[in-house]
Length: 393
Image 1 (cartoon, one colour):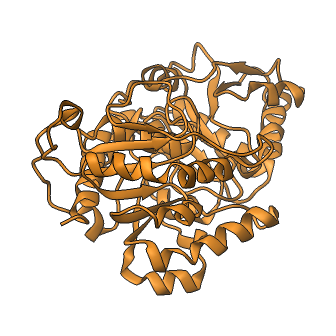
Image 2: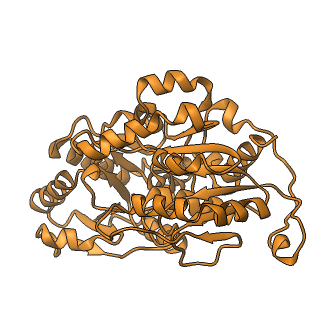
Image 3: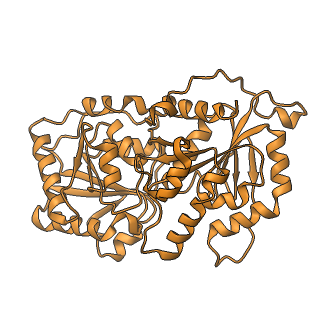
């Protein structure tokens, strides 16, 4: 799910704040930095990709105040402390395999980079990275984004779960984004015990509420943001768009924020979907405020999608699928509607109900946003970074 901008377990986000001086670049000037750092390991460019993992890392780097470094294969924006990993292997291999090969091949250079910058905590964005991560000194954290690959993708599913058995051996903490730990095998969860913690998505502070657009002068502007991938249930999404166009012509307008508009065109929906492209945080916040409601039909793999919390922060309601991890994370929040089942009628019913409530002025954007005020990026990222650095004490 695209996102541009957390309320974790009590013990996790209850960590005390630590006053940390900024010493970025000190090591390059020949001085030993006084600040210990956390290094984030991730294969993709965290700034140009539309996944939740990338947004999670990009916002942490932006808010780190000299406490972070990045070990990645590419970036499209400057990063103060950055090690570029050269990928090895055939382009036909999965990228994570090429990235892992690069970590092995450059292990001495990476170890030197980490040592010079006094990196004390290593954060890996998938358990497979521990196949190389054990080589580097520091407290190790692995973040599980969502509930893992689908069982239908047999090879990826088995590999993920096999690598999870490295966690009790090498990980000092396992962070689950969301409230559903099913991305970890049950045996691994038991072996990890209290090392498993839970975090939730936050929103960029530019996501703020505004009055709803006047429905007397426009249709309900419904949007979907992010990747068109199997876990997002695209066929159901397409069917909802078609049904609204057929049964309620002129009452709903559909907008897409992301890089996969061609998928809508291939599905024959190009004329029904307004493509707004891949947007940065400021543009996405403005685009959400121009809409009335967001939609997510995911059937598996979700944790705590950034786009949901960002939409609520803008004071807009959101219709979600009945995926258990989404229900656990969002049920009961102001502005959240959950479809009864995975069929077109259930989603359309929720959307029509929301339209009626808007026409009756029963949707209060300020009230929706107020319920998620404690998940603002400035607060949540500081708590998370403090808790990561506490591991090094």
